[in-house]
Image 1 (tube, helix red, strand yellow):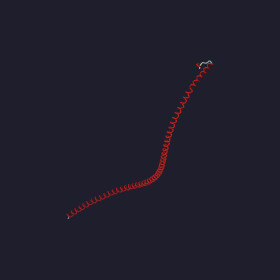
Image 2 (cartoon, one colour; image 1 turned 180 degrees about the horizontal axis):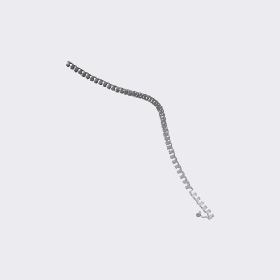
Image 3 (cartoon, rainbow, N blue to C red; image 1 turned 120 degrees about the horizontal axis):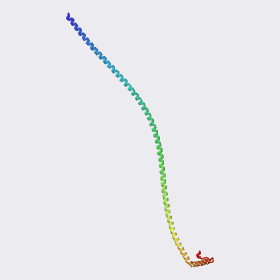
Length: 201
């Protein structure tokens, strides 16, 4: 019948329309899956690049750490060598200082002994000097007393001698005056014999 055919056409059209809608949806889903796959591939590529860079950085860090470790070991060796040398020098210096201290202590002891000896000798010399000065003062006082006594005696002797001489001069004065007058007269006579006057002389 005609209605049945028309109905069948409508049903086929609806089926075609329904099928085309399903295909479009499937196509959209397929494109979405492809897009997601592309995105995942891009993310995967980025992650791989990040992983490579991270690995490269890790290698660089490891190399740097190995270099630092080597430098640290070298510094430790050098530090140990320096410490050993400084310890040796310090021990040598300590030995020199100990020897110098012992020498100075010996010199100080010797100087103290010499000082004590000098002080003892100086004290003995001072005592001897004081004794000598005392003896000198006593001798000077004794000599001064002797000189004073001798001066008094000499003065007495001189006074006595002068008194005796004056007495003798007084005793011989008349005779001396007479002899002088006779001598004078004789000189005048001699001058007259030679025709000379005493005033001419």
